[in-house]
Length: 191
Image 1 (cartoon, rainbow, N blue to C red):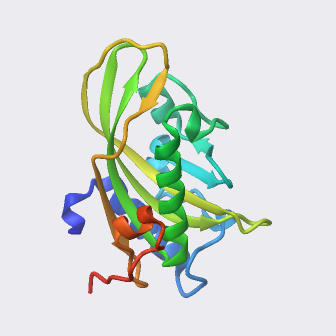
Image 2 (tube, rainbow, N blue to C red; image 1 turned 120 degrees about the vertical axis):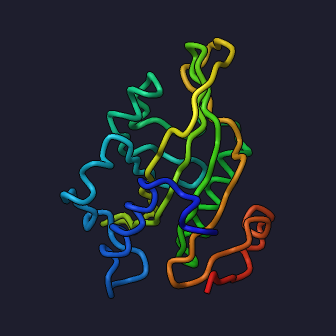
């Protein structure tokens, strides 16, 4: 994928992640992710998630995103806002991002119970949990469009992805159909 297709927030997070990684292990520790003047402008729309066995927990959600969505989902599970097959695919993609390691960019629509919808870009980069070594992702979530949806009973509904692109961080990246198909993915390279 071409870098120019991504939002500035996604590109800034990638630059910071690469600096963070440096010459260290292929996936940095969560504790190494610190607020710097370079990353501070992204904080309102940053999210950190942790992959569990059968779901994903939102460990940190920026205040700008909470305000945009109309709900703070910190501490909640992805399964609270998406269908089980969406959770399964998201977990497979997180596992692939750690196995290669690579990052990914997705586009999806979110519907908010108050009758508003928003298309968002998610640029996601792998992190390791400090003590447990759990699989985590840090994400720049950028609203890129706004629209109207039916008012619903759910405060937030995450619709299935309309696009996914893997980002080569120097180790290659998988084919998404292999990741979702359960074969783990075939190594590709953007170079």
